[in-house]
Length: 376
Image (cartoon, rainbow, N blue to C red; front, top):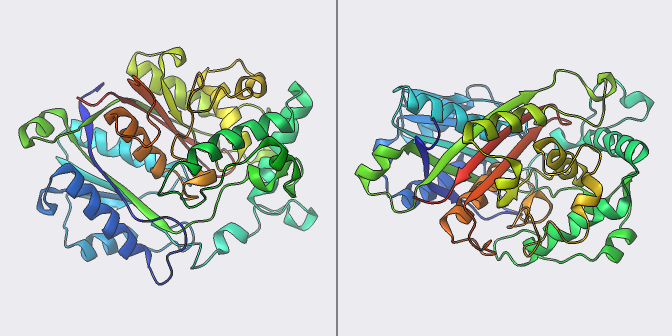
């Protein structure tokens, strides 16, 4: 399937505080913008795949959205793997296109936890809340602490990730948080759950994003101006909660990344730019290890010294990621990957021909990986 399916259009809403906006309205705006970007009419869409809103899950959400959009898709519905769902939906759409089940697919996601309900972000996680392990940050803090104890990873190395991504977000006119961060400022930021500080943690944001997919052949016949080919994709899932895992420093991102790279016929060294899920800085570090950019346990030194910045060896999250552009889980990273492959990103990586994008959900339970090639 390498290169058989393209992302033909991308769209988004504003990110940040959007009072009075529901998720249906936000999804429709993002989808309308994505279709306009692709130069495709709504009537051409015969697949609609959506991640249900995290903050307010709803039964039959996919059908509710399709009705609001005036669509009766051949293929449709909602899918949830936490933050990994967006790339997973893109892979499902690509496979459906490849096998003739649909021709033009919309994949979208919207949520409004900033001005709506934050219940999903504030609730207890698992059965251990009564003993002090409360909420998602505690789980990621456990992973970070284990990595530090086993490999000597430091807070400053996590800080270097935050500094790099915040630098990129500060240059993005559409970012929710446009404020650079120095390592000194990072060291002074308050603890959330030791060893994670405030600046290790992503934003909480309203907003929506969408992509349009179709076959390479159909994109040519329709005269799509800037189709970006999908070179590879993969998934990996752990069924074990953090406390049950045999090794807290390894995740199924290894399987997801290895599958996607093999499909693309590439190695980690062949990747020019990366959009890595950054709900917490430790997620970036461990994902880069899992994908083979650094040996296992050596992600800390790899992320230090400006290597992840726009002028570094591997620019990461060039629009600001979840730490700066928007805390929306995942689809915005795909949009920035598409912009990089089109050569039209705000902070464009020179001569970038390949981009890897990661999504992950839960406390590194679910992983999806996407590899994009240069605009055709």
